[in-house]
Picture: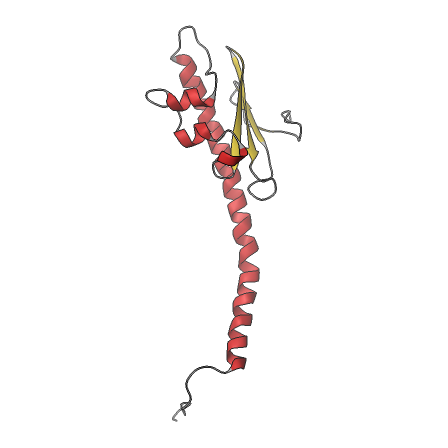
Length: 149
């Protein structure tokens, strides 16, 4: 059985419309899943960054005489050798967010600190706000920034 080939070049309008409809359908299914995966990856990166900051603070404190936590994240990033990378140390405002989150570090006393990870664009780059202190326990926070127990 022989197939008859069309002698004209190109595609008909109906064929093009069918292809566009199929591509649109696939995009409508795939894009929300892609955005959700990116959102989840940003939150996982924020959790990992807070763990890194907590470990770096403890290492910094152990190297000081008398033992004290760093005054800010920049002190962790500018030490030689650095305790955290410069990108994380500079991610302290919404404009300089790292992987969708920015970090607010506060030295409460020589023996206490707090660090909060907040999404750069709430609902888009992340939804949850994370918190860690000198205990090293990672917590979720409420909208006011207080840790949830």
